[in-house]
Image (tube, helix red, strand yellow):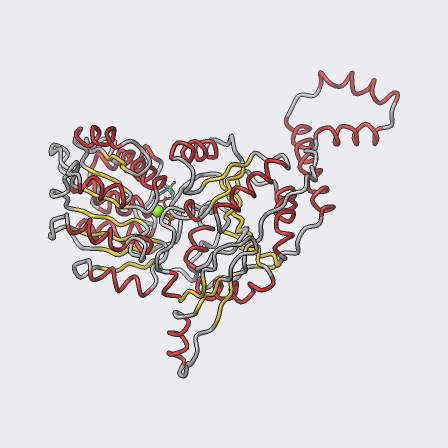
Amino acid sequence: MTKFNELGVSAPIMKALEKMGFEEATPIQAETIPMAMEGNDVIGQAQTGTGKTAAFGIPMINKIDSKLKKIQGLVVAPTRELAIQVAEELNRLAKFTGVRALSIYGGSPMDRQIRALKDGPQIVVATPGRLLDHMRRKTIRIDAVQTAVLDEADEMLNMGFIDDIKDILKGIPSERQTLLFSATMPKEIRNIATTLMKTPKEVKVKAKEMTVENIDQFFVEIPEKYKFDTLNNHMDINSPDLAIVFSRTKKRVDEITEGLQARGYRAEGIHGDLTQGKRMSVLNKFKSGRVDVLVATDVAARGLDISGVTHVYNFDIPQDPESYVHRIGRTGRAGRTGEAISFITPREIAHLHLIEKTTKSKMKRLVPPSNQDAQRGQQQVTIDKIVKTISGKDLQPYQEAAKELLEDNDSITVIAAALSMLTKERRDTPVRISSVAPISVKKAHGSGSKDNNRRSNNKRVYGQRSGGQGGRNQGGRSRKGNFQRRNRDQ
Ligand SMILES: Nc1ncnc2c1ncn2[C@@H]1O[C@H](COP(=O)(O)OP(=O)(O)OP(=O)(O)O)[C@@H](O)[C@H]1O
Ligand SMILES: [Mg+2]
């Protein structure tokens, strides 16, 4: 166990860490903070929810001259919500240092950002598109940047973002320090990464699995048309505090959201077609518990740190194993436990095995819960509440009324009536979700030696057939294709 003061962290940052309740450094922090403080370029890979933000944030803030009102640290992140969150965490860490972080991202007014940039923040956390916009308009100066960070580095160096990242890095002095962090780092991307860095030190926190062990992973084999009811039933039985349901397309996110609302859940959707204002308000409602179920595309898969997420559902299994790792990593963060449940159609079983192989973890098979199980599950929620009330509350004021009630009715009937009143009524409003083609895995041909086999795994071909609802035929996509242009703003 490493204490932060053993890592050479400055006193004002130590004070902030204390205030944040960080007692010990996590393994990735213990390993990378000293390395980065020595000035090295670092590639840091560690599981989701293990504190990578502070792992790059602390050395970056530590190095900044707070008196100089110039941008000295630049963090690039793939989504707007993540940029905001990272800036918030950096501001917490920098609270007593005089250093300020500002987030700039698309979908929010340029002029306001320009004014905020003129205030002289020393750190900017940005999404690539908006940052380039500011660079082209010369409304941002990044020529004093000493530390550049790519959070979710493998995503940022993916074909969807790589050109933007190269353009951004060209605007920063070459003597910069570059830090790359992610929970996943496929070899192809790592190779690209090293070309942008100066003899980077690579840290990969030793873990048997790519996923966190305190996330219980399950799968349900289920035909497409039963997915929605299965989701309902599972949620009724397990009554998640907060759940995230990931789906493959924006359309399905909307449909699942509407379906859940029709069935009486407090659900909201988030994806790239919504206005930034709506995205923010949905996320804030979810964070504050005014919404219990967040239905999302992969736009919410990476980096978001929302405490209290107990369940992640993959309503649709993701295309690539890395995405699986990030999605399920929205639960089980900072040592907490969580459950991940993936719905796999019978034709996607091979894909499930590919994910298991890549992540080196196993998903346990779950039998799809029946409506009856769900009903019983809902009743159990009420029973649990009653039992808790029996032990925790002064019931004296109710006893007289209870006695009277029992004079005219037998006890079982009275309790059954109370249960029925207190139990969330199951609605069976019909819900139809438009279909989507299964993800299939085709093995690449021609492999000889074991080594070849291993390499050919990286070249597996993913074919995605057109969806039932006149969906676009995306054709076969190579494994490399998975690292290619994915929807930048899903
Ligand atoms: N040393 C620490 N002690 C206690 N809590 C910590 C520590 N470091 C970070 N945390 C908290 O752990 C949570 C997860 O941290 P963070 O979001 O940085 O994880 P991450 O590794 O970046 O995950 P992801 O791969 O999903 O982006 C945050 O709430 C953060 O404040
Ligand atoms: Mg992170």
